[in-house]
Image (cartoon, rainbow, N blue to C red; front, side):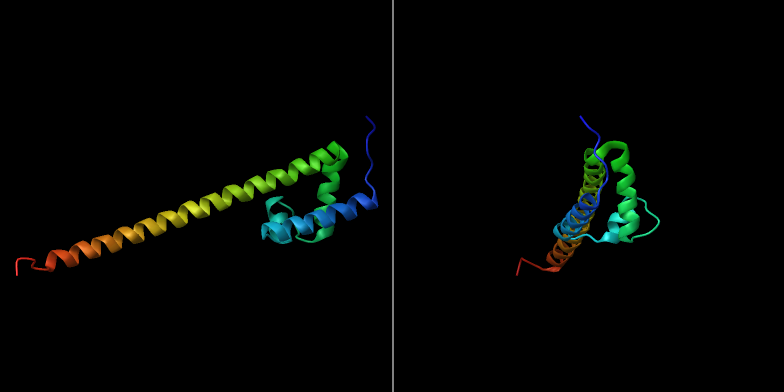
Amino acid sequence: MSKQHWAKDIEEDLVLLIKDWLRQTGRTQSELCQSLNLPSSRMPTLIDSLKKDFSSGGIPKVANRLCEVEELWKNEEGGKIKKSLELNSSGQLDLLDEICEDLSKINFNN
């Protein structure tokens, strides 16, 4: 297996892939760079980071790194959904308490 070298066409394909992936996931380049702990959200910084991954493990390492970010985002979304459900549940309990309180004030014996 020969070691693949970074080339301009790889970089161009990677930029297109990242832009499409971000569009599909509803995320921004800034969010991606934050998830990768990069000092800047500019594309050259992002590409330099992925280029380092490429030099130490090729496309599989780059793909693995992006998959780790995807997993991180899914876990974050799961936490947001759970928190939203918890908030909705407590709101429903408050409403139920209010209904019970109102019913207790009604005299059904009339």
